[in-house]
Length: 192
Image (cartoon, rainbow, N blue to C red; front, side, top):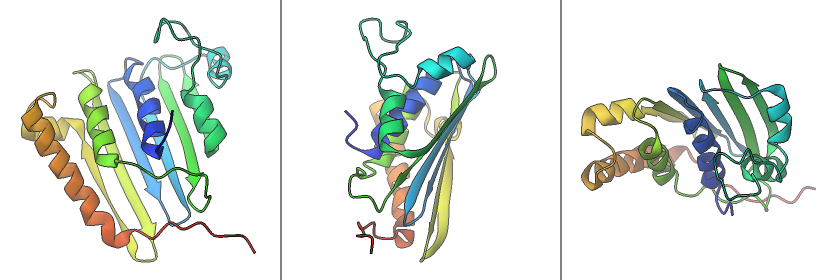
């Protein structure tokens, strides 16, 4: 189940990591009213026929999860989010975009973004780089950061050990902490 918005991000990013990608780019853009996710990979891509099927919760290719009879990642995004788009070309990659209305009382909280980024980085194949760009635009100004899996590996070594994961987590926590002055409080507003 998707309890946090980060759960949606992790689910879709996992699809990109499993598509034989060598590069996955994630953009998270936030305003006081909305948060937009864009996940782009250079993986194997999908045919037009498969693109039509992946939005059906009862479709699975039977390869990724051999015992699973449903594929709920994209259908959950479509049901909960807004402005969903999927563009894919065989052999070239896939771009998935979606957003959430942060003024909607039914939208889940963001969740633990540093842990989600670390999980994506740690779960990526050795030959795959992941770049995360985070942007915030608010009444307090604009800010953001960009971090890549390759830069963390260069600085810390392999990200699969407890020591390097702790250091990476502290670094990612610090990046998010630096953004706090730019956050706007997300409050549900009753339309007039």
